[in-house]
Length: 430
Image 1 (cartoon, one colour):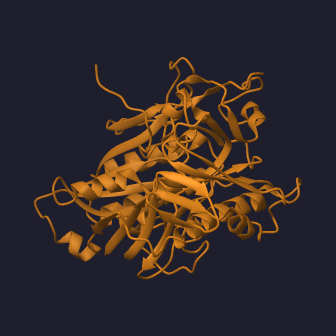
Image 2 (spheres, rainbow, N blue to C red):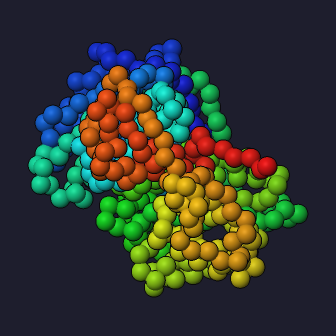
């Protein structure tokens, strides 16, 4: 498979009479965009669109999802297949990317596990989305008593439609850079780079229900058995988030589109190892489901003759059991593992970091302690509903001070401890 990402670099946002891009400025026809998202009768009438730029004294709260604007300009399928386009496979052809721009869905809360993006100050140091030029959708339900699942779906679709709309309106613009990715089919992969270890990526997706959902080609992933997926399909938008889970380690749609594990493994393919494939699996609630999915995922890895797999988690607590079960089952099949997770070690860092463990899990990368407490100073402008700071995960009653400052755990900051490594935290050995 061959995928070309035609990148247009966006460094400024503005409202104007026509949506398009020129000299790094993405201009947005606000009236046209509002008309587009207002077509959904599940959303209220007081919808709005605003912008937030890096370095501005702006806070966005609560944040549900972040999406990178894209549009397919050549090849099979279209962006966000199974969601706003047909179900044709993606991962090949040419896709336009508005790099540096992001669509942020915010406004009235869907579920308490949503987050905060500060565009400046100490909070900006913890979220990667303080560096993107953000088109912020301020959403509300048409009926305050609306079913939460319906409202989540409406917010999700508004974000995806906006991301596609922005990029589609720029489809005729010349790319600033074209990134080309080639990845072989499995038959070719199995006979290539004979001297290198065969490595795969076991991609755990949050699918525990109760608004903890992720979608693959429009299918709720909790309904699938683990399956094989080309890394280029992931890069081309086959996976989107429907999650209302803790903001710090939720894999937003933007992170799925720009998965750094896949990006790094593609760079090292043919040099350090033979990157054979991705295996997509789910995170479950019941023990039987955990056993079934971990058994199928590791069976696929063994059937492909993989020597090693990288395993990434999404979320914490209950999903730790899925992570560890995937680990020890793979290891006992002779497949070496490396784990990516984060920690919930208490505000003092002294508590047990994971809810489960095994002796085989001896190669583990941490994205940080989500319980660490930070103070976010007041911002001149707040997009959304500031008093949600008192109820979102990582906050508490009294988190929002009278002057607008917020005291929260990192858990409340969008992308702060991303278990895919799409984060601004780092570490070193002493």
